[in-house]
Image (cartoon, rainbow, N blue to C red; front, side, top):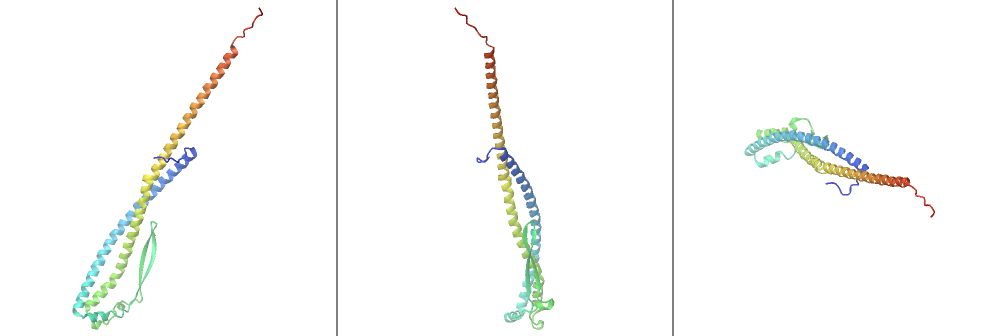
Length: 229
């Protein structure tokens, strides 16, 4: 429905047409952006599913090894084995922009590059199952970080898709129809004013012609001279 406060002038008509053109262009760009976001989001979801399955399988295997180690070692021995860790992990967080969405990028760094530094205990006094559990968790760490990065990216991407979808709907169902109604309303008013002006001009023309005709007839009337009696 046309806005009641729209001024039906040609300048306003031009402004509304420019507004409609801009809204249509923005609508197309946002639709393209939404479609591309959806495509990348689905790729992320599939990657996230694959990583989650691998991480869950790795954690299950590590837990199995911890249970076997716990059956061969006492709880006190297991607690003592992890009291003084030798390795240290540093996590660096950066961002990359994907379709105007800043998604996180996680990168881990070890304090040392020696692969044996993941064991904080002497190998001679512990079970091999405990070694396998620690080794599997150390290998699983990069995938866990990838999973965390993927899940956070999915959350941010989903929020951006929802925001873009709302903008597309607002343009498609509110701004574009409103501009079209305003253009139709202004065009109708201008045509009506033009027709009214033409009618007035025709009436003025008829009045002027009629007045000119009467004046001409008056000039052509014969003059009657009166004779004295």
